[in-house]
Image (cartoon, rainbow, N blue to C red; front, side):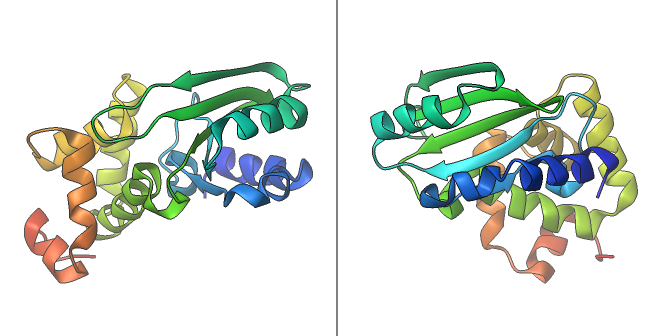
Length: 179
């Protein structure tokens, strides 16, 4: 875990953010749990909110007192349902909560994190450093992985499709023997 990741864990614990979100099946995802964070990385939390209006009202009450609190509705895209995105700062770290009516462990953010963890395991530390370098240059996480892996097409879909591969299949697909 990176120092920023450790700090994020302290913040989540101290402010009991996951306890507060418990009714919405929260999952911390993104670069911090994978230790490929940059100085600009936020604490990403996915939530399952079948009723977005109810979640909006809940968020106003639960997080409205935090610095920089804002909430916006994100329209549906070709592969992600409509969502509420809540942002605020907590003890100096930005927090982003992404809530949609999809179960958290089925959301792309969770699936991508699983795939990225597997890829980082088989590709090793140098690969993680290359991902971090691309991210520091402004590339988003999934496009950074896709670029380094030579994946074509939509990086978000391409990365999600790798989740069904077993570790040996993933190694074969990536052209490596594994760590």
